[in-house]
Image (cartoon, rainbow, N blue to C red):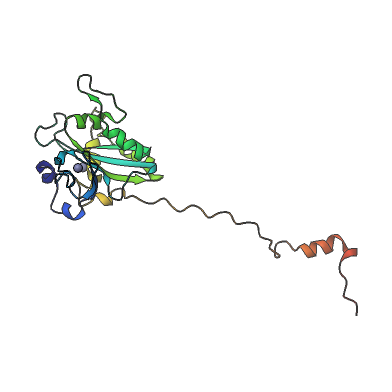
Amino acid sequence: MTAAAAELLSPAAAAVRLVHRVVCDGCGWVGYRRAPWCRACPACGVDRSKVRPVWLAGCAPHAGLCCYLAHIWPPPDHPWPGYRHACHYLGSTIDLRVRWPEHLSGGYDPVSHKNNGPGSRLIAAALHAGCQVELVRVWRGSQARRLEQRLKQRRKPDSGSLRAGAARSLRPLCPLCSPAGWWRRYPDLPDPPPLPRPRRLVHDPELWDADAEWDAAFPHLADGPSPG
Ligand SMILES: [Zn+2]
Ligand SMILES: [Zn+2]
């Protein structure tokens, strides 16, 4: 973690700081770290900037609908001109295993300000500027679409910009930026259990007494009192 990044964390952050799965792009080493960029690769010794957080422990990308929040650290030495502070990206997908690597693949063209890659333009521009991007929250299941719509609707009403308010509204949700209260905001609720299966039709003699119906329909065949 960079010095600039550490300044953003309050002392309480240490208690809830997340554990990241990290990989070394040089040798393929995989490990778990609280601070993804804290040390060089223990396997091959390559510089720590080549170690890359891929997801949060417990948040490994799965198939299925989800909404996700990415925290973008500004570069430590040369501030990203457009974004001098940490900022966030909120998206949704039906398969984060596919979508997250697309975001990290970059492809930003600084001349045209377009993104030629499959990921989002914001993340591609951030990576191009030397920012580090972390996946910090994932909401799964049917709540994901509603949550994304709700958060993306939120804007400052009196500012003309479409982007205004987005950074501010996502900050309270971010575990790195709001270590004390992030988990209270839109907790990741499990989907309700599925409805019980309809019961199989079971013959209930109270409702339909087949023997009595038979006797009423064919009285001449009905069993009489037993002889003797
Ligand atoms: Zn390595
Ligand atoms: Zn954040």
